[in-house]
Image (cartoon, rainbow, N blue to C red; front, side):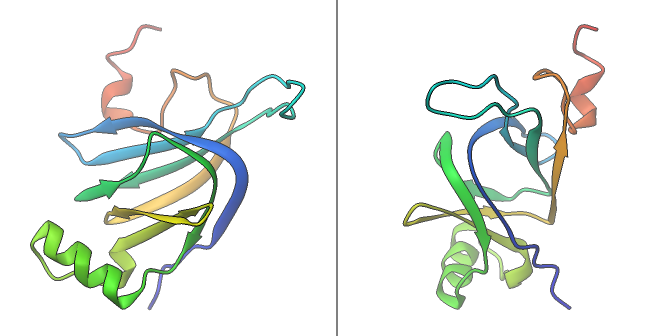
Length: 130
């Protein structure tokens, strides 16, 4: 059974937060005021990954599409993390003509109106000022 979740967006996304101790990664397209070049974004779009073993990403992605990994990509990443991987653990983020990778147990894509300091990564939330 595949848990592949297709998603695409023309918005800009950033590596927003990574929690080493619990293997959580947050990639966010933050809400923002409109500019002459960009429309107003009234919501954040969050890609929240957990059980992260590895990621290979630039800091900023201009538009993304989640696509299926190739057999060769799964094999290459299995060598990197030193274990045999199931394709469902490899998430490919295509941005422009490039492919970037996250090896994780799972992920969600959620839209929200949270403040920029709010996060779905709960462990650290109680350390932040209110």
